[in-house]
Amino acid sequence: MEQIINANNATQYPSIQDMIVPGQGLKTPPVSPFFMDVTLRDGNQALRKPWNLEEKEIIFKRLLKLGVQGIEVGFASASRQDFEACSYLASLAPENVSISSLSRAVEKEIDLSWEAIRKAPKPRIHIVYPISDFTIRNVLGISEKEVKENIIRSVSYARKLAGNYGEVQFSGEHFGDSLENMEFAVEAFQAALDAGADVVNLPNTVERYRPYLFVAMVRKVAEALPQGSKISVHTHNDLGMATATTVESFFAGATQLETALNGLGERAGNTNTYEVAIALHNCGVKVDLNLQSIYETSRIVSRMSGVPIPEKAPLVGDDVVAHRSGIHQDGVSKTKDLKKGAYRAFDADLIGRPEGDRIAFTSQSGKSAVYEILMQSGISISKEEAAKLQPVLKNLSENSGGGELSIQEIQSELEKLRALESPKDKYLQNR
Ligand SMILES: [Zn+2]
Image: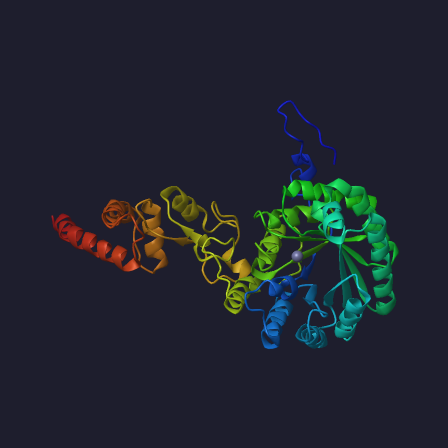
């Protein structure tokens, strides 16, 4: 992925030709993403009031319903309660779901992780250790050589515990901040694989720069490691770009995506599972999740976490299906029966949203809005009548500050209009 500076001094991106198959649409990798959910670990540890066991079980069951391929159930060595929760949830795990517990590169933490999850049909020990130059120097205060030795020692230890039965995942913490020592980052991941790791996870522990920089770094690791190495990404949303970073990383070779329900997680949160899933689905990627359960899940998680869903939250926010301006309403109305809507990024049905495109009448709205709103409420109206009613409603809305009119207000204006027009009609008909 070489960077070429062109005449406009802009760096060069992959061309459109790199991303489409002419006449057929978007190019997609021939694999489905493996969703490793981190709601119960990264999400839970950042809650004002972390979940108790009963609540964790509800979230765990929602994750099974959503159909994620892996669930990080916690950090077994963090406390007695964490250990018990990991061990209980592992005992509920079905055959096909990987169950992971996080540990630092310390043998007694790895022991506790394994002890807690070993009863799951697919247990996974997850080891995290910093690899960025900044963290090695300022937090660990040791040499890169020692970092590598610690990685090899802890991963080998976990490999021995898990035997042929369990899996081992290694995360190079602060990978996204490893620009100064990229060569070492590659070496660290290679060492983890050599020591027996099944998956290497590349976290953007803190989102500081641009998505494409991270993606280029993922690409560099993917190209350096042996073909077929399992690469994962775990991104945070500090600058609001975690979804973009994760989606593009998938196209750069990361097949495991670590995400969280409702984007819960430290600071501005982890990557939002729903956004990644629908973005990939829209690009033609086969996403093996029960997408229909997204909307309901988002409501349950919001209630249980005490973290409200913003009105404008993509996909699940209350207001994201509303159309209020005339031009948009006209486009919505004319394309409502087509597979693709002029202003519709996703179908409400796809994510189990009870309500699809919602047209609301404000001072910005046109005659299509009047027609659609009344027809959708079961009141039959002609397009001519809608055109006559629109200026009346616009006035009414303007006089009340330009706000949204209720269906009752619209209906009452329609009745007034019809009452005014009917004597004339009768007169004309009787002439
Ligand atoms: Zn994280």
